[in-house]
Every structure is written in C-alpha cells, then in structure tokens.
View 1 (cartoon, helix red, strand yellow):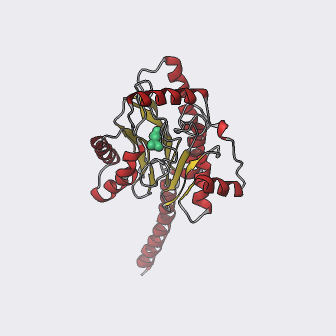
View 2 (cartoon, rainbow, N blue to C red):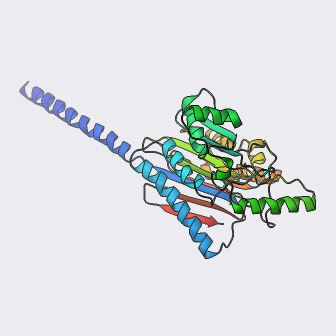
Length: 341
Ligand code: ASP
C-alpha cells in the first residue's frame, strides 16, 4: 500500500510539472510567429537605370520597407504596417501614387486605393478621388467606419472630410514630370491614332503603382495597393487597384496579394483572388499560383506583376515585365531590394 501511494504521489507531481512546460511551449510558439513585409513600387520597363536614379529608388523602397517592418516589430497589426508603408510611397513623387501620380486625359489626378484585412476579410477602398492626400488612409477609413467596401469620387471625399480628414487641392499631386509625360503621350497617341489600354511613354511602358503585404506577430495578413492609374486614362476610368479580388486580396487561410500592371486584365482575371483560390482549392504554392495568374494575363495581352506572402511568411513575386520595384524583410533576418529580372 505504501508503495502504491508513493507511486501515486510521484505520478501527480510529474503530471503537474508537465503542465507549465506545455504552456511555456505554447508561449514560445507565439513568440516564434514569423512576421514579414513585402512591397512593390510598380512594374514595367525598368532596366539598367542610371546609378543615381537607381540609388534614389533603392533608398525610398528601403525607407518604406523599414517603416512597415518597425510597426510589425513593435507588435503592430499587419493593416497598420501596410498603411504606414504605403503612405511613405504615396508621399514620394517617385511613384505613381499620391503626390506625383499620373494624370488622366484631362490632365487631372484621379487616385484609387484599397486595403484588406485577412483575419476578418473586411476591406475598404476609394476610387477616382482627387483631393485626398493619402488615399490609403481613406481606404482604411472606409474599412473601419462604414458598412461599405468601395466609395468613389465626391462621395468618398465628402465622407473623409466628415471624418476630419483635410482635403488638398488637385495641384498638390501634379508634378512637372507628369505634365510633360502626358503631353508626350497625347502627342504620340494623336499621331498613331491608337487607343492603348496601357500607356506608352518614350516607347516604353512603365507603371508605378505601390503595394504592400504584411504578416504580423499575431499571424494576421493584410494587403493594400495605391495608384494614380494609367497615364492619359479616360476621365472616370477605374483600374484594378481599388477592386478587392483584382488588385488587392488578403485571407489568413491562404495569402495576401497586391498587383500592378494594366488593370483591366487584372480585373478580368480576378487576379489577386484567383491566387488565393488556387492555393485554397488546388493546394498550389504561392509562387505557382502567381505564375498561373500572370501567365493567363499575358495570354490575354496584359502585363504587370504581383507580390505576396502566405501564412508561413513565404514571400513570392512574379511579373512578365522587364522589371518591378520590389523588396521584402522577414523577422528571420532576410532582406532584399530588387528592380530588374
Ligand atoms: N494597375 C494600375 C491600374 O491599372 C496601374 C499600375 O499598376 O501602374 O490602374
């Protein structure tokens, strides 16, 4: 009897000892959740840039990347990291988003942006706005403060103003460079009398939309995209960037995606959603799914690219253009900034 009760006491003691171990293992797993951020600054004819120009782009991409990464590092959400990263690029005239965006056929800025939270599948977007300094902020506002997903034009601007956002004049967005490009492309289009879906500048196609996808410490994915659209676009035209499932998509179960390129093709192929769908139902890897969608876009005559990450912090990008401004940073220390093929 004495031996039996000793055995019983030892058994209880050992079981109790096991419990804290299990809990601490769980905590360690949470701490070990990898986090990561991937960005793009548009795809197109990006080849052998002069060293000084390459340096300027590299520095701005790095600033955007580090801004978002710092949010994740201090435990911020993926959506907040995406918002802050995109704002850095919107505030720079280097990209076709926010300040320095391309202009429509009337010489006016019309901007689009979207953001999606992969945990709740909640999303927000604005399209065709001309007075909102940071369209990505407006997209977040639509996501968090309305029962809608997409607001456009005047309605979007008045809504943002009612929420305390200060509007800016159209002139804030317009740069000399973009005015010059618009004049050149209009002259060229007049000469060739062709109506391209993509724009041609000096014989080269170049996009410049910006996007970001993040995975935070809690394992949540978010994606966002912001753009001025296509140079010399028809007044009122809306591209893929503010369309959830076309230019932007995020689902914690699969991946987050942000696209750039001739938006019409990304809308027609439901590009970003298709990647998630192929992963979910065909069990494809992120990069394989991206390739399948971009190949389909190419077959239809479109071009561009996309960035993405999955729930395990695998990062992938794919494009059928000469280059794409892109970068990523992961909590395991990996970091890359690239432009060319
Ligand atoms: N996808 C954008 C649009 O069609 C353009 C771009 O990516 O530069 O509006």
